[in-house]
Amino acid sequence: MKDSHDKALITTRRDFGRKSIQTLLTVSLLEHLCSGNLLAKEARLTTEKWLSQVNEIGLSIKGQQLKQTQWQTQVEDLLSNHIDLPELLKLINFEAIAKNPKLMNNGARSHRPRMPKLQGGPERYVFGQQIFALRKGCSVVPHGHNNMATAFLILKGNFHGRHYDRITDEEKHMIIKPTIDSKFVPGQSSSISDEKDNVHWFKAEDEPAFIFNIHVFGVSPKNKKRTSRIYIDPFGEKLDDGLIRAPLIDHDEAHKKFG
Ligand SMILES: [Fe+2]
Image (tube, rainbow, N blue to C red; front, side):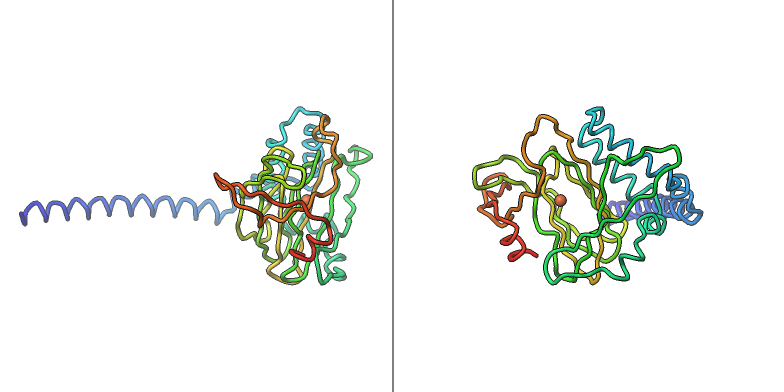
C-alpha cells in the first residue's frame, strides 16, 4: 500500500516537474520575444499605411467585398495591434482635445478631429471619426445602429464596456443577448455591425476618460432604416436562453437613466 502510494507521489512529482519546466520554457520564450518587442515591432504600420488600410477596409465593407464581421475583426486588429497608441494620439491631435475636453455632467462630449490627407491618397476618407470625452461615472449610453459599422478604441482612462447582439426588433422593444461585459483599458477596442454586437454601452471609470471612434455608414444597402442611434434600456424583461426584451427609449430617458 505504502509502495503504490510512494510510486504515485513520485509520478506526480515527476509530472509536476515536467509541467513546470514546460511552463518555464513558455514563459521565458514569451519574455524573450516581448523584451525585444519583436512581436510588436513587426506588427506596427506607419501612420500613412495604417490610415490607408483603415480606409481600404472601409471601402471593402461598403462595397460588400468584406463581410461586416470581417471588418470588425480587421478594424479592431488595426486599432489595437498595428499602431502605437502615442502615434495615434498624435495623428488625431489628441493633446489639443485633452487640454479642453469640455466635459459634460451627463453622457459624452463628442469632438471631431481631422485626419491628415495622404499623399496620393483619397480626397476624402470613407470613414468618419470622433473622440468621446467623459466624466467619471458618465456613459456613452446603451444604443444600437442601423446600416452602420463602428469601432471604439479606449484612449485614456478605464471603462466598463458592454455589448449585446440585436436578435429581433419589436415595435417597442429590441430583443438582445449580452455578448461582452468587461473592463476596457487604453489600447483595447471593440466594434459594432448590423450582424454582430450591434448594441454598445461604455461607462467611464476615470476622469477625464476618452474613446476614439471610427464609423462607416451605408454598410447594409438593403437596410432602409435610419442610421441614427436606437436607445434601449438593457435591463428589460429576462427571457429564455439569456435573451432580454429591452424597451426602446428616447435620447432623454437614456441619458437620465444611464448618462
Ligand atoms: Fe454607437
